Length: 204
Image (cartoon, rainbow, N blue to C red; front, side, top):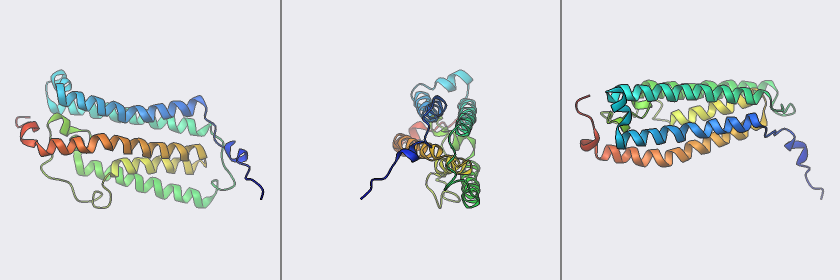
C-alpha cells in the first residue's frame, strides 16, 4: 500500500509572518474585551473615566468595533499572499458557497446587533446596563451565539472566496477562540443576571 504524500498539500499552507500577525490580532480581540469588561465590572474605571456607564460602554464598543475592522483588514491582506488551492477551491461552486456563507454570517451578526442594541452587544451588562428580558427572537431562536458564529462564517467565506487553505485553518482557530471566550463570558454573564438587584444600575 502506497503512503499518501502530504507534502504536496502542505505547500498550500504558508505560515508566514503576515498570517502569524493575523492570528495574533484574532487572539487579542476577545482577550482584550474580556479583560477590560472584567476590570470595568470590578473597578468601574471606564464609567469613572467617562462619567457615565453608557458613555463608558459606548467607548468600549467603539474600541472593539475598531479593533475588529483592523483585525479583518489584517486577515484579508494576509490571505491574499497565501497560496491558492486551484484543484478544489478555485471554482464557481465554492465561490457561490462563499457568498452564501458570507451573507448568512452577516445576517447573524447584524440581526443580533439589532436585537441587542449597542449596550447589549458590547458588554453593557458589565457596566450594570442589563436587559429587561432575554432576547429569544431571530437570530437567537436558531443560534445561541449568532455574533460569534456569524463572524466565524465570514472568516470561512473569505477563505473560500480566495481559495486559500490557510484561511480555512485560521477560521477554525477563530471558532476555537470564540468558544474559549464563551467559557469565560457565559457563566459570568449568568452570575450578573442572577444577582441583577445588586449589579443593575438604577440611575443611569
